[in-house]
Length: 354
Ligand code: ADP
Ligand code: MG
Image 1 (cartoon, rainbow, N blue to C red):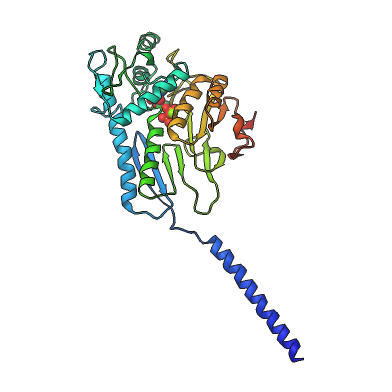
Image 2 (image 1 turned 90 degrees about the vertical axis):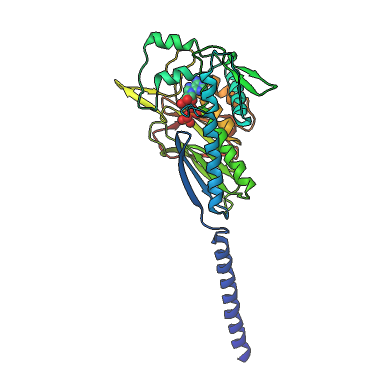
């Protein structure tokens, strides 16, 4: 009898031991390993820049990150009168070279490279046309046909002269103008990642106006889930969610900056052969790759090139994937998107996979 009681007692005790150890493990698993993520936003590079830090951090980490974006804006923005890019543009045709910072030189060189591989569909000398259209500004308008033809004559990336020895640049003809709007945000996001890593921040999200870059691994070890912008809605509405490890996701499309006249949407990516907004059968192109710099350049380039040539360009970069959204609301994915380590979940069933 005594024996039976002690067996029952020990069974009850072991039940509780097992029960509590399981619930303790559960609890340990679900308790976050670091403090709650914190976000800060600032208006820079003509857009809303948001940084979310998951790791332990201090206010100075945000300050350093935003200072770095400000520094890049100060060098490359066309709306800042004494930026390096404004200076080059002002001196176009004067024969005077402008000495560039490492940052601007690197961005310009990458832009010229992408211009080459896209056969000029992407062209950083698009400046005069961007100004004439003014898309995204209060002065947006449809320039006259003759004006467009005249301005197209100033668009040619092959004329940009770089003096390697001194790291300086010149535009040979008055009227030419550089515009790094298609690539500077991508460069800035990578630069912020560098700042954060240098400061010991291992986990963060950098979102520069929809150019998203994830840094490190999420505290709970799960993959990052990043929305693919719905090109027909305002920013922040997603047609699909992509789950991935540390990557950049950058979208170019008809939604970011545009104006509508007589039911026609005039968006901000311009066709370097016609001078009008690109009509390539696409609403948007999202690029997913390791670096935001490349993703930003390729999203604009692929969008400009259109479905076939754009996808060919993406496929020529290893480790780079894409989702193209056609005007028929069909999604086309690069080969590595199916069965790879990036998975796409459709959010809006008015879109279909082709
Ligand atoms: P967003 O700035 O919305 O992220 P993009 O990266 O696609 O979008 O860049 C679009 C910007 O690039 C335009 O606002 C303009 O400054 C510039 N741009 C427009 N057309 C071209 C082009 N064909 N090649 C290079 N840059 C362009
Ligand atoms: Mg771009």
